[in-house]
Image 1 (spheres, rainbow, N blue to C red):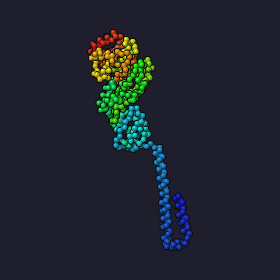
Image 2: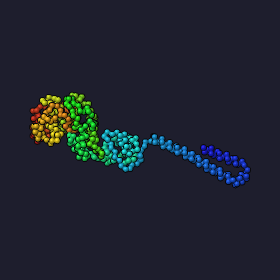
Image 3: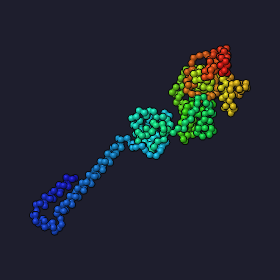
Image 4: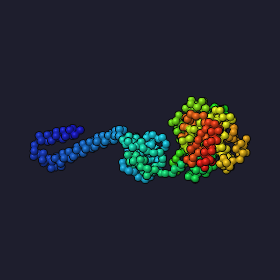
Length: 402
C-alpha cells in the first residue's frame, strides 16, 4: 500500500517536470496548486499508511493476547488484598485445594496453584484446616500462606479415646456453643451421617438398632466457623471410616476372626478401650472378651461391669465404680447391657481409638478368661483359670490397687 501511494506521487512529479518551467511557475502562482498540494498528498499518504499499519498492529496485538491467554496459565501478581477464609479439608488433593482457593477469589485459576505446588516440594506439608489468606494473590504467594501455620485459624477440640457419645456431645458443645440437643438430634440417623448400613449387621443374628456409638472417632478436630452439629459428626464418622479403611478392618475381621462381623469387632474394641488400664493391654482384653463370648467361659457372657455403667449413663443415672454397684444393678434383667446376658451387648459402649481397633481385629493368641490391674500404671495380669485370677487379685491388693 505504501509503495502504491509513493508510486502515484512520483508519476505526478515526472509529468510536471516535462512542462515549460516558467509557465508552470506562473500557473502555480495563479491557481495556488503545485508543490504545496503535492506535500499535502504526501502527508495524506503517510497518514493513511500509519492508520493501516496501526490497524494491522492492533489486530496482531489482539491476536497475540488471545494466544497468550490460551497457552499461559492465568495468575495474579503480588501478595493480594483484603481477606478470605479457605478451608483445606482432610485428604484434599492439590487440585481440591486449588479449587477452594479459586472459589474464594484467592487465585486466578486452579491450574496456577497446581503449577506452584508442583514447583515447591513443601506443598505436601499443607495441613487440613481453615486458613486466613488474601484475595487476588499469586498462586506462589497463596501456597506460602498455606504453609505458614500462623495463618491457620485454630478452633480445635480434642475428643479422647473411650468417650461415650453423650460425653462427646458435651465436649463438642462446650467448645462450639452448639447445644447438646442438636448433636443428639443429628445422631439419631447414623446412616445420614455417613455410616454404611453394612456396619449394622451381626453374625449372632441379634437385632441391631443403629446407633452412632463407636463411630465418633477420637481425634483432634478443627471446627469451622459455620459448623453445625451435623457437619461435625459427619467429619468424625468420615475420620472413622478413613482409619478403618486404611486398616482394612471390615475385610480382615470376618476373614480372621471366625466370621464375626465388623460391628461385633467394633463392640469388642469399645470394651477393651473401657476395661484396659494401659494401651499395652488393649489386645489382651479384646482376646478375653472373645474367649468369654465365643470360647469356653461357662455363661458365654462378658461379666464386665463397664457395660452396666454404660447403661446407667445411657438412662441418665449416675455411673459408679464396681465396688459401689448393687447386686440389682449388676444383674438387672431389664438392662439390655446386663453383664450376664449371653453374647456381646447391643452396641459399642464408647468410641475406641486406633490401637483398640487394632487389638480387636488382631488380638494376641491366648486362652485368658480373667484379668486384673496389678500396678499404678494400669497394667493387668491375665489368667486362664479362676484360681490363677485369685492369686493375681491377691497381688493387686498387696500393691494397694484393689
